[in-house]
Image (cartoon, rainbow, N blue to C red; front, side, top):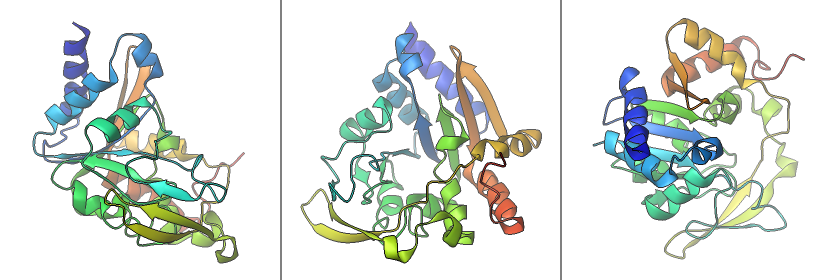
Amino acid sequence: MRDDLESATLSEILRRHETPPDAVLIVHSAIKRLGQQGFRAERMIEALLGYLASGTLLMPTMTWRTVTPANPVFDELNTPSHTGVLTEIFRTRHATARSLHPTHSVAGYGPAAAALLAKHHLGTTSVHENSPYALARDHPTFILLLGVGLESCTAIHLAEETLAPDIYVQPPENTEQYELRDRHGKIFPYSLRRHRRLNRDFEKFRVPLAARGQLLAGNIGGVPWSLMRQQDLLREVFAALAARPTATLSET
């Protein structure tokens, strides 16, 4: 049965990289090709939640394409994610919380979800010190990429914003104003400095991580996946940016 394959495959990926059942797991995905092979998004989510028996599942639910200065309202329950079917099914059918952010919200389920997602609106950038990615540094946190590469790994922006904000974030004079509405109808004003549009190359960090055995990779039905500890990834990126502030940018 394809459902059995979904569960066994995803569980084996997490088990091989010694992902604890009580870990925080951040999943970035593009599963169209898997869907064409009969994999169902709902069953994949159930498999991930089943493995994380006492852990927390997070998925980015990005809205930077649709929540803009021309459409400046973000609604926790009603603003859809544009980062794939897996994230939209997760946030509408499983997630118990979603961070308040106009462009880079995150949905979550599990014991740590509420705490990790509660402070995203307390900052003026996308991946600041109160973002879920920063707060997850206090937990055993793993990143699973399904059908996407490191270019989709939002946590890398934390290092950029921390060490070189003048390079990677829009200046204060370009601040945008938004309205955030939580699930209870409470409204929060939000001032956002977006990321600059730069030619980044996050994939360059794959080689050193893989060489140290800190990144496990393979494919499911020809669709690539990668799994790593967020701590290992951020240690690599922070070190690179400390040595050269433009380290996440493409060299071509």
